[in-house]
Amino acid sequence: GIRPLVAGNWKMNGTSASLDEIAAIGDGMKDGLDARVDALLCVPATLLSKAADVLASAPVKAGGQDCHPMEKGAHTGDVSAEMLKDAGAAFVIVGHSERRTDHAETDAIVNAKAQAAWRAGLVAVICIGETHAEREAGRTLEVLSRQLAGSVPSDATHENSVIAYEPVWAIGTGLTPSADDVASAHAHIRAELAGIVGAEAGRMRILYGGSVKPSNAVELMAVANVDGALVGGASLKAADFLGIAEAY
Ligand code: 13P
Figure (cartoon, rainbow, N blue to C red):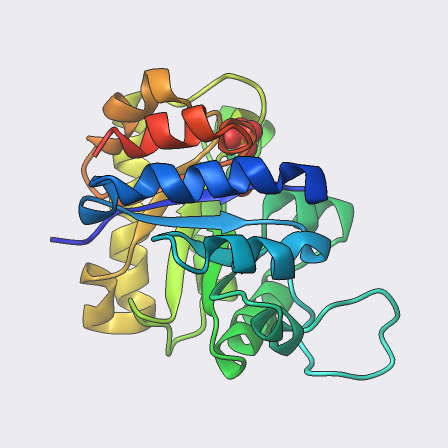
């Protein structure tokens, strides 16, 4: 089977004062949880180097939350995948809905960022997901198809990429899709991926994200084709992050 991954996305949260919480996540994963599930914490770029140091001897990888498509150059304020790698990242999230909304990132940009991640030796966590209006209009699966076709490069593999399905309306709202809706979205993603990457689709991890917490993790993680979670708010507290990992 596919080894599950629980990934935390700290978004724009955390300073040096948060390093104890990061250490607690690292320590908590050590006592047997690491045998059941992989763990990743995607922290703000400013915290990456320190977080990677704190996690160096723990079974938790450090990651970034975005990267520029290019390696270097005149792009004030941007951070390249190579810089994230240099700071200790092993993964980088690309195409999170907050980036797509706040920074007008298109599927083509997300695709270029995924390739930048690989160029630097990082695993890309490629995010997709429908808005509330798209779901209401019955367009969820069509939107997922379009985002996958545009955002996932055809040479994606289970080693260089992870897909994260995050319904935009479920992010930070406490709302989650039903298990049946998650199952149909993830089955659709797996089938569409096969058309993009061929047999690799069967080995790639497809994470669910959006209001995952310890109390709903067991049900959500048990859904077919759900190979882990991308966790926002609940990843900020070690007890909650570890409670979600305990679902495995
Ligand atoms: P919440 O877990 O806070 O809903 O955030 C989900 C998310 O956007 C993770 O990338």
